[in-house]
Amino acid sequence: MYLTGFADEAASDIAGQIRATQTLGWTAIESRNVDGVNLHDLSDEAFDRVAEALAEAGITVNCFGSAIANWGKSVLDPFEITLAEVKRAIPRMQRLGTPLIRIMSYAVLPDRAPDDQLEAERFRRMRLIHALFADAGLTPVHENCMNYGGMSWQHTLRLLDAVPGLRLVFDTGNPVFTDDRSKPKPYPKQSAWEFYTHVKEHIAYIHIKDGIWESATGQVIYTYPGEGQGDVRRILIDLLASGYKGGISIEPHMTMVHHHGGGAAPEDQRFENYITYGRCLEQLLAEIRSLQSSSC
Image 1 (cartoon, one colour):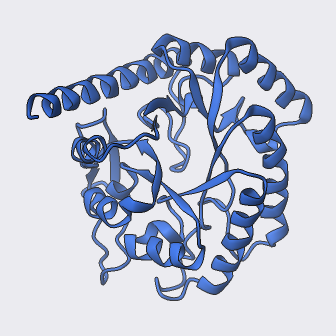
Image 2 (image 1 turned 30 degrees about the vertical axis):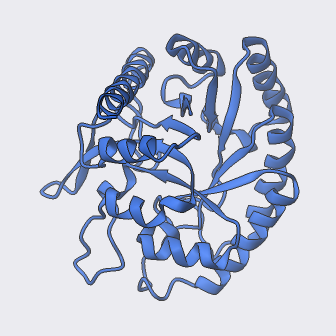
């Protein structure tokens, strides 16, 4: 098992992202944005500079946090948009030696019911996306975010049935603020633990995020890991007891939120929060290991 994180929450530029990673004593970044631009949308010259900086620092990119089919993309958009992103991502992943890429299953169509989300077209596209990466020796992992598969664990399982071989990245914090669309209106929020237990066997990678849903304001308040409603401690206990060997990636969202349109805190606050968040996760894992070893 190894620790990593969305270092663009610590700093916008690659130098700051590398510095945050090294401060934590980690050796990997889950790369999403550099200078506000997703890795697959950087110019060739900008990507070259990022790759050179990472190589010089001895930092790897364990997973590419792509925008492919994410919550900002519609299944009604031309598929050529997605294919272009995939084709840009593959050679960049190969150059960086990155084995995993985070993908999604397109935004939920708000004017359609949960059982009327153009499943056939989504599944067709997802099979092709998966095949392109798999043929290149790369592993796409689907995240339970604001997309078709994130509507409920049942929707994720339908997606997995339709896309043989697809693996998951499970985010502990997303269920906190996401409607459970497998239930009647008014939709309740999801349970991270319930979602996790139903998809556990398909998980290849973990995102750690936590928060508290405030129904009065209709907002989520992001917290340090284990302090919110994301069942982080319970999920980590189960993961470690199950012999999980994959990556655990932090995505604090406490000073920067990508998918809620919020602004970013000053750079020094972002950096310090990222470091504190990483240390909190390390402490939580140490506590769990200590409890598990003492109960043997």
